[in-house]
Amino acid sequence: MNSAQGPGDGAEATLPIIDFTGWQDDAAVERTIAKSIDAAFCSVGFCYFTNTGVDPALVARLFEMSRRFHAQPMERKQEIAMNAYHRGYMAPDSETVADSSVAEVTKPNFSESYMFMHDIGPDDPRWGHSVHGPNQWPADVPGFRETVLEYQAAMEAFSMRLLRTFEIALDLPDRYFDAYFARPTTFLRLLHYPPRPANAHTDAFGIAPHTDFGFLTLLAQDGHGGLEVRKRGGGWISAPPVPGAFVVNVADVLARWTNGRWQSTPHRVVHNSAGHRYSCPYFFDTDVDVPVDCMPSCTSPDNPPRYEPVTYGAVLERHLVSNYTYRKEGP
Ligand SMILES: O=C(O)CCC(=O)C(=O)O
Ligand SMILES: [Fe+2]
Image (cartoon, rainbow, N blue to C red; front, side):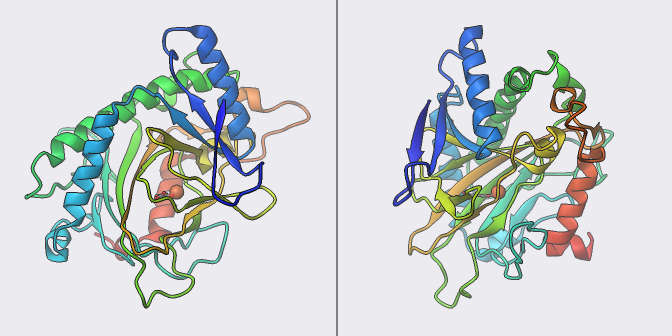
């Protein structure tokens, strides 16, 4: 295992880099990777994945589409403003991380984003309920829809396969996760951090400190940097760009499911420069309505379950209502 160091950080202020080369062909390699994942997620809760098999050319195309989308005039973007199913465009200052467990956050993020979720059709029995409805597509960005769908499919395939490695890492029976991921809930967020506004409040962040609420996040970022991860003892480590790598982190539902063995770690984006930063987090979460209870391998007589079972859907709804203006106001 390698590691990436942020500028000015001490020797311990690094995030591990886990190389997936040969992962699917060799059980011994997969076991080594599983161990590295467990070590990273038990400690800092964050790491990098490299050589995942997700085509770097596809990632590059996705960033190009995001740049072209965000370069459009605001009126065009607002034509596909966030709908009641949490899909569409979110202007700067429309999300406040009000449920942050890390800081009292009262200022909205100054980033803008375009959110997609798992793409389903009106014939799906879930259609029209909660977060199951239409994605929205820009009319004037050629190749956009194909690229987003191809990227979502690649990330979902990788993430589903990764569950097998997580079963090894967490000493779970084979296929333990199948019952929870029959219809995974996924989000792809195309984020743009414009140059920091001159009149921005001193505590306005690109994204304010928060933990992710679901299962797992896999983030592609451009070369700007700015993502920071909280150290266990306090202070922040930077998660600088590593070419070709995803920054991967445990989110709240997964941490709870492991009885606290894996850490859902606070992070934030500090973007003080005059440049434009782009990032594309992909959030891979469970089915909406299957309750998650403490994993059998994460409890013992000395370590009883610390949390009540919960459904991901309940966590999701709470999060959306507290953080997004459009959701408070209803469809
Ligand atoms: O843009 C980034 O680097 C982080 C984004 C993030 O933390 C989020 O969308 O939850
Ligand atoms: Fe996040």
